[in-house]
Amino acid sequence: MSRRIIMAVALSLVLVAPRSFAAQETGKVGVVDSGKIFQQLPEAKQAETSLQAAAGPLQKEIAMKNQELQRAIAEYQKQAPKLTPAARNAKEKELNVKSQSVQKFQQEQSAVFEKKRQDIIGPVQQKLTAAIKSIAQKEGFTLILDKNAAAYFAPEYDITFKVMNELNIK
Image (cartoon, rainbow, N blue to C red):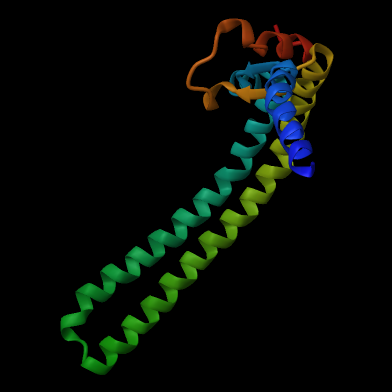
């Protein structure tokens, strides 16, 4: 008796399950060229200008430290044949310390610059994401992909211009 019930339940699942899966809606997918929009945002242009202004002095300082290191290395190479082995070892250690110091400075400044970049670019990216989300919700999209992540998409799925209108970009 229980065997018949199990078979009946299994048979009903086999017959009903495909229909229930077919009845599910797959969702609406859109594609957006966020890079194109980002480049046209006035805030992004201002952010880029601010970043370039911040990067200039930093790059000059790093270049200056690298030049000093290269001069010290060149000077050592000229003097090396005249130095005693102990003096040579001491000078090489000094140059290694200086080289490590320059590398550490570059890494620290890179981290500081990346933080500054996030502080400046972050709000612009949030504004863009909010506009994409707004269009997605208004039009019932369940998934929005960036154009660069899609190998192919039909043009009717592109919502780039809708997002640009949302952000008042002409």
